[in-house]
Image 1 (cartoon, rainbow, N blue to C red):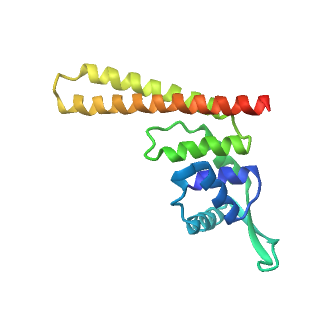
Image 2: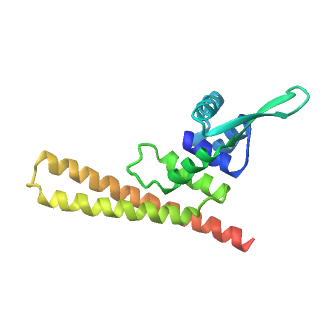
Image 3: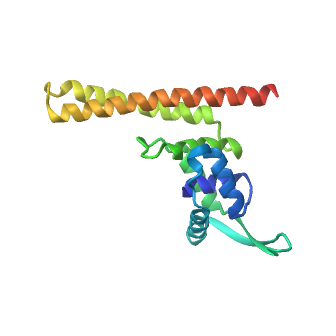
Length: 177
């Protein structure tokens, strides 16, 4: 969650309510359960870690001072490292989805290129797992585990194909519009 919030701040400084709304829109139905308080806790942690700074900004009459958060140089470096990260498997696919959405929204990276980098890493891991599985004796418990790893990686690759199609169509819509 921290990295996704930082990436959203890379587009522009924002207050917690705006970040919450953008994250919920990015996640669609999966974002409905997102607690607004979680965003404020995350922002406080990012500020303590020196990755974001908070400034007071004029707001509405009923809220004369709003906290607006912006990235620090260290926060910008962390966003760049997060975008380059191809570690897999992800326990939560929503994080990767948020990476794509944040990269596109802030124009930090091309989501299709991020998908391609992730695919290359998964294909490398799939080849390793398949080689290891072939080396195991038939019916061994390690072979069963490796079969599960192979099946998970294949499913993740199919999902990345769907991500690539969706983001390619989104790019086509932007270029054509």
